[in-house]
Image 1 (cartoon, rainbow, N blue to C red):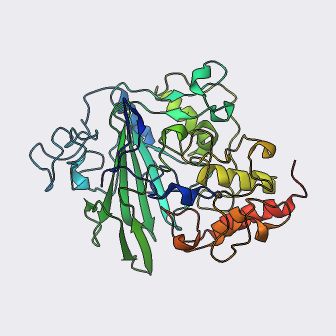
Image 2 (spheres, one colour):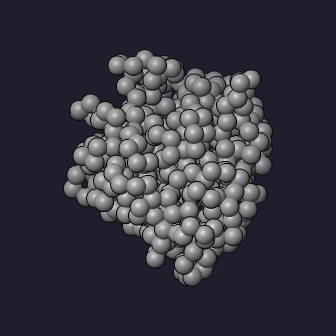
Image 3 (cartoon, helix red, strand yellow):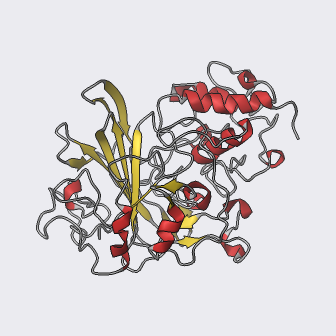
Length: 417
């Protein structure tokens, strides 16, 4: 399932083969926009623990640890990518079998290759309660650029709120796994194809958990049997991604200093990545303050003493700010964590699109002290995308804990600043 971002001479053009809502206006009235194709989420056992072998990323031949044979395309094209964990030479002909991509262990495709660098984030993206694991594979010699607004103003054209975002080199592959009750339902590969483009593919796991096959270019909905229960899952279509994976947000959505600043395995994971030599220049110490976890997850509890505002703003940053921000696809307000409330353009602000089906008279984005009158909270609470839910793509189940975190913050406010 390819999704592609492209910039052409006539201006920035979001290709129809890419991802994103077919009705941009539907996402403009309140926060909560999030996509399941975002490369963030909660940590999981399938990827955790591989970062210690990641040093091979900076030396040796590309794909040396990869899987797959030169002639085995698994029923699909992608010549030049087999066994190397690199973007395909033809983005419309990806490898159809995950085991042949070179991004996973050839003998057990549930595991990434040894040189993949696992990571966790502080504030996870909601993906309909799926557990998630994630990692990245850099090209040989590739380095991560960490944005430094003070040293290089060009890094932050949309304000210092973007300080500490991580930009990955061409050839990078982001790996993300989705699972329920320990059983994988999907693996996504998000690949930095060239200087202008990222391309991504979703792979559907079989019942035996022995192989995953690339999905249809159309959205696929199914009921997935975990062995303990049946859950509903949605593989995104080619139109469901770029609203989230947009250039202004950095294309990859999880990796930034405030998200990555956490202890993993007894060591700060930014220190681990720096020790592997994977930064152009490591983030300055002390690192940018860590986002709090908004509510109890598999990653742990919110930071001791975290306020209702800090928890809500962390949630909005992780789940909404990649679209609702300056330069984003829906820039009418700004949900980035470091944006002051007075500059967010939400307090008693009239939503451009109006109310939702169940509350057409509620047209203010956020009303201090009144969650039930706040359209951003109402949209998060709505389950049906056809009735005004946010996000409209990428998530189809209400995050009750996220709704509560945001509602508690709204109710704590007494007035607009």
